[in-house]
Amino acid sequence: MFELYLDTADVKQIARFHACLPIKGITTNPSILAQSGIGLNQLLLELDTVLGTGARFHAQIVSQTVNGMVEEAKRLHELPYDMVIKIPATETGLTAIKKIKAENITVLATAIYSVQQGFLAALCGADYLAPYVNRIYAMGTDGVAVVADLQLLLNQHQLNCKLLPASFKNTQQVMDVLKIGVAAITLPYDVAAQMLAHPAVQPVVDKFTSDWREAFGDKLSFES
Image 1 (cartoon, rainbow, N blue to C red):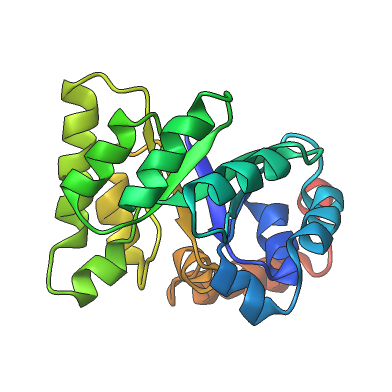
Image 2 (tube, rainbow, N blue to C red):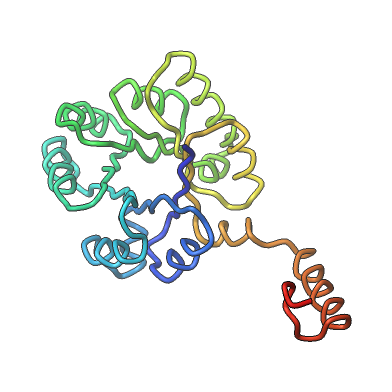
């Protein structure tokens, strides 16, 4: 089943979109948490109440060495939540991913900018891959094409790994990625809001309301 995530630590926005969308959980990174001014433990505690049971949380390690990454991943895995451990897909990170997967810990390989980088992370056992779509565009490469090529390689080599694209600037990037058939996606809340909005919708709704009230006043549909 497709997994929809929000890429934020803003509890208010998470609650807002959880009310109207089937949010699987959230993805975070050190920058998101630092900018929000909330630590991971406090965020998880609050979101456990907001999202309820079944929510999945993607949290990134901050250690810089292989052993440090492995130990930090183990500690995150011990938390009483459905945790996915985010590891940057660097040489050090791939080494850590192999060791972490030996502990049966769910891993997302993050900071992916190229097809080969993501493919190697999948070969190392990553459960999720997070290509940075808009950041790839910012470096002069086609971000959607990177996602498409990665999905093709995962399919051709029958790798049990899900693409979870991140870093979106607009809804067109999102829709282009969804057409590829990725298994998951994570959205900043402003892009999620863009997906819910269309300038033609509210005028139509207002017209429905005015026509109804002109004919039936304050009656509800079942009272007419």
